[in-house]
Image 1 (tube, rainbow, N blue to C red):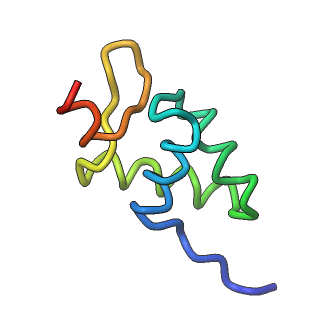
Image 2 (image 1 turned 135 degrees about the vertical axis):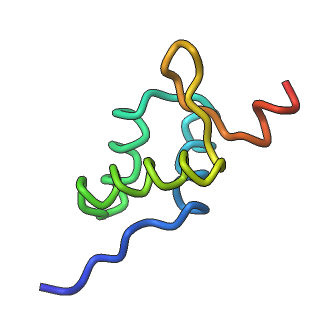
Length: 72
């Protein structure tokens, strides 16, 4: 079985942008899984992107791209 690399922050941001720039964690994870990434790695990538400030978690638990959240 080939080694699966954890999606990068850029991959997470791109997936979130495909969803309109706003989505639940589950929707974002499903978008990453559609691109043949393992679910566990996708979940970790979302967490890391959030911790690094690339995506933000809103008061309604929706994820947004930070650059777009600042501009709004």
